[in-house]
Length: 157
Image (cartoon, rainbow, N blue to C red):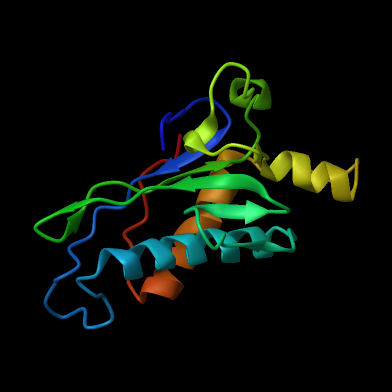
């Protein structure tokens, strides 16, 4: 992509995993595999929140709902230790993604959405989860999908 934005209302997760870790045969030293697993964590998180139709795009990375990106994903590794991750739009000010100012991820003709926007479209009175609530679901999904035990953070802020 061309522009990365991380700001208030986003859950930014950069998991640091050793993809060649001994004793973790479920991990693969394959960045494409890891990218797809990260996307699956987000898709399952959205499903847990009652958001249907989240999925992958045939061309672009990330997680999409109705041709709008709800999560940007970028992975990198050095010696098979991952160093990048994703930004999931929980309830950011979507005006920061105004395409007259920036072209999010360098992708033309696509919009950006958020968990809050999707839930409000479904039901205007729907409660919007906090970043901490979404983070808890993400951690649960990471443990399940990657078959890992993740040490709980001392405090999510």
